[in-house]
Image 1 (tube, helix red, strand yellow):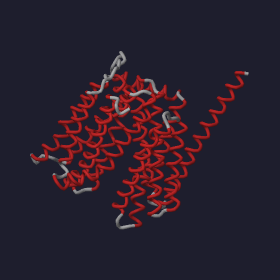
Image 2: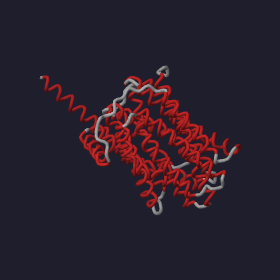
Image 3: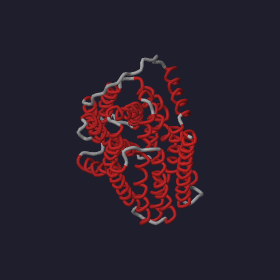
Image 4: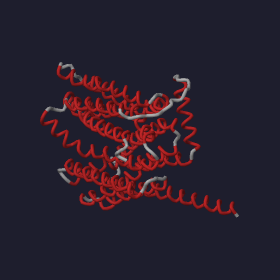
Length: 407
């Protein structure tokens, strides 16, 4: 599959671009705190990175279905180069302010709302159904590998050049991404439809109506929203808070756990294509069950050593569920709706994340962290188990009906 010219350039461009995104994401926070010395204002930068997906996420999917994908991706990458590099220029001219960082961060993420769903729709166009699981696995492996490597790269950059040059590296990664996309051969015929503000919302409504009537996609989106809601705070915040109660080296332990998690995810992504060429909603729910088992494990036992084991279990379940979700969208959604499907998926993820952080942030003030972890893990197990039961039961009913019909 790696001999496929189009897949190779797609994966290389996406992996390099992902590295730049991770580095610039950290740099925005570092620079904001250096300028303001305020935790509250630094949090504002983090909000500026999530708000665009709630505002423009669905619109980005519509545009992805409308415009020629290759040309649109290259244009977006080329726009991001001067925008991100302007932060470096403002810094050396001593004009860099918190407000400017806020604006650039918001604009970069807003462009991402249009780039990401379009980029996601390219892989099904350059791969066959048989290649798709392996291609998705390699894509996720590169993304996870970048996440694991980024702390080492960031430490080196900080020691040698300073946080400001995280933006310089990011600008170069956008240029490399644009070059790689230019090498991908795409055969596409954008739909000939009226393009107006009214038709944007009609297009979103059309996809929502289609998704509601499609049983598999409707279930996939519903289960994803529920599971991500139950996972986000427990994984991103609760684990760190629990470690801070147990050890004075909570940040180092958290980083080690994330490293182990990333390593297990990469290993799972490498092994998975050897056993599965096609994915299903049932496989997504099996991944969710393993995911919930990991959270329940470290919630029940609530000890540093068991946290490591629980993170490793989550590292097996999460990529299985994630790859199955992407595969199902790529396979079940028509080409002309893929952009809206991926943007709707991203919108639901960010909405679920926001609600989870807000609700659990309130609950933790009067409910112990261990209870929240255990409760969330058990609910993920219950959600995955119930979904699996419904899916298996429906399959058996179909089979029985087909037998009776043949009689």
